[in-house]
Length: 543
Image (cartoon, rainbow, N blue to C red; front, side, top):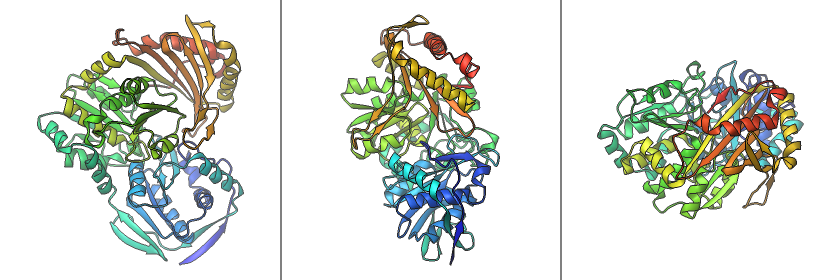
């Protein structure tokens, strides 16, 4: 094995966000771009010498080529071994599970999550630490510091590794193990859920449609739903991963999973519908004629998790990202559970999970998970829903109606304004920030403002403080609006506006969501002067 030191770097803009580094695919394909980021990551963690890593991705364009580069770099940097998913495929929760089960030093996820794939679309890379979760802020800052100082990377001059066949090979002294992407993940799921009960549910005639969206969850869903659980063939659609996700947008929400939504709202609807995203960590849940918001899904899972074997002893606590609705808070309060509010980004749940302070976590962006791994997990959420439906013998609509009658309903919607010129998005946020101190006590669009601040998170485990995590405006009657700029896009800025209104147990829970939130939306538009500052008030995506 010949090791080369290639002079390259630094590259501008390689700061990892809440979900790693995401750029256009062609940017990652520039000579040395991926290599410098990977070398910077290895430098930031004290090198690769003697270490074991997991590498896998969602199968998007450039996935296999990137893995070949990373294997050669791992060998050149002295790694002991690398575990890779067959064909380069591993869902994000499967990577987390392998890191934990094999006690590796960390792992790399190659994905831009729910963003489109293709040579003219998006690519991404994220480093996960030894607990299986995303690198915390201290490490991502060290990675960024390295990207600004790097001048060379190390890579082995050798032939490509055959990723298609399960088995072992070597690059120099480094061992490479190609594993079945599904086997160890499925084994974990079998310890958490009552597979026999869910098999009986399907055997009784229960029908389901799972849209894998041409992404990485397809093989997992086929093996578990149609294989182990006996769901009829054809239950899983769009099951073969493709480099461009079939030309679609692998984001499991009513807009991008519209084919599934149309079927679930039709007279021929199955009993249960679900979808997952590009890398398998997000989920959408929908019943016959009944869409479940991610915030409501987290609350329902928290209230019913004890019905699954893995959670039969109850939960320790529940955590949610700040923009996520307070529906799960109401469950936690009633059940006497600890409840935490964190910034957006799954890495913030890691400390709480490791410290045993929470069992379930969730985000409004369709991510839900538990302490079984340190990532959100789309198929896990679907299986927990199936376990709950099998035990309760109710439809999704009946479960939701019962939940709202018990806890009240948090009407909720997220409005995304995509590809906003960065200077305009920053101007809106800066202007609103300057107004916060004067908003309390004013009346806007018929609503009295009761609170206004910028969220700062104090981690109860390590004492770290995260500032500037979103602007919050509270209104009378437990209504709320949150505004923040997202770090998951690759073009311009994405302004996210979250709207929430609480209807108590004795209120009307059957209102149209837009109608229920109209006053809150109008107040936000007026307070932010949105039309003047970004030139529009209608969102690109509404979920």
